Length: 341
Ligand SMILES: NC(=O)C1=CN([C@@H]2O[C@H](COP(=O)(O)OP(=O)(O)OC[C@H]3O[C@@H](n4cnc5c(N)ncnc54)[C@H](O)[C@@H]3O)[C@@H](O)[C@H]2O)C=CC1
Ligand SMILES: CC(=O)[C@H](N)C(=O)O
Image 1: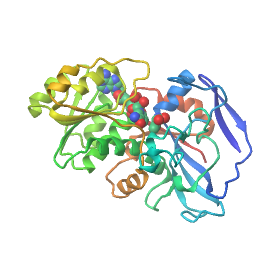
Image 2: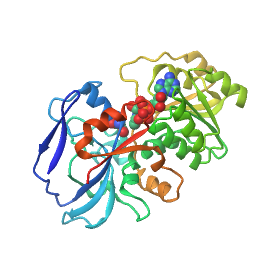
Image 3: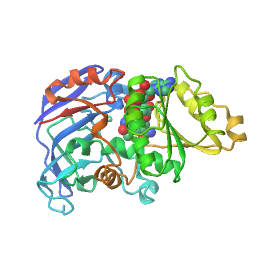
Image 4: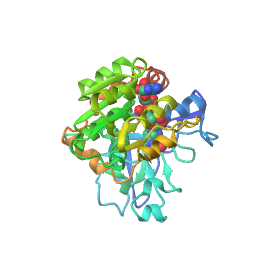
């Protein structure tokens, strides 16, 4: 089968590999669509992330979907011919986090497109059947591939415990912030404030339901929020990973409000005014990957509550993966897709 691996920062190599054989509990998926995630771009640009380094060729891509073409002998939850979304992280199933349903925190997870676990930029993936989800006929595999970033949004909204009628600020209108905004709306948020520094992304957020958009380059976000909502927002979700944006997000909630941090700032130390956070009794929560979210993501797509297609800016074929990665880095792009067929 054809596969594309990152061999060094900025260098992909097309490889011919053995087509994988599914084990008894696995399925073989003919991959049809893969989204390009910010972390794929990070691995591509730097060849490393925090203390993890790409030493052996690594197949990127962890937002994927396709068609089941073979099932292992113990598999009965999906069948040959089913279109499925692939959940990219397979946890150990034994640790305290797995046993309590918080498998996103498993320290022994095999997560696609991180050193040691190949991702989906290859023709076929053999994957545990428990981590593939059948897509209804109304959902395309292109949309299904985006169950992954939708899941990041679901996890954050669950962590935020959003209540009906809440005012929610989302910092960052990239794929994660935009999909988190959709999920927050589906969870009952009445006012959705979206902040970014790219005007076209703010326009797109407004088109899909943001009630207020703020360009952080021109406006004092905390003041704008207080002018509009008095004491501040109920919930602020950080989805940029940029230090100045994280600082602003921490300042956005009303007393007793909540901040959920999704953005990863791997090389930065972010100043935090702990006195203010304590005085205003702010809950600051991290949100890492996701657990038990794929069925919800599929339900939200089916109900039209999340618009995955609306964030897709372009689609390129597998043989143009290098061009696609370069295009995906442009600031106006929210999501680039690779069509594997
Ligand atoms: N916690 C988790 O499980 C996950 C975390 N992430 C992280 O979430 C963050 C967002 O991911 P993506 O949407 O893919 O990233 P992205 O880079 O595509 O989007 C970030 C957005 O933030 C905007 N931005 C940058 N600086 C800003 C500032 N100072 N003020 C306001 N907006 C600003 C950018 O214009 C962009 O639209 C990243 O840090 C990523 O690493 C992504 C997936 C999972
Ligand atoms: C969950 C993600 O998408 C993230 N890019 C990661 O690698 O953890």
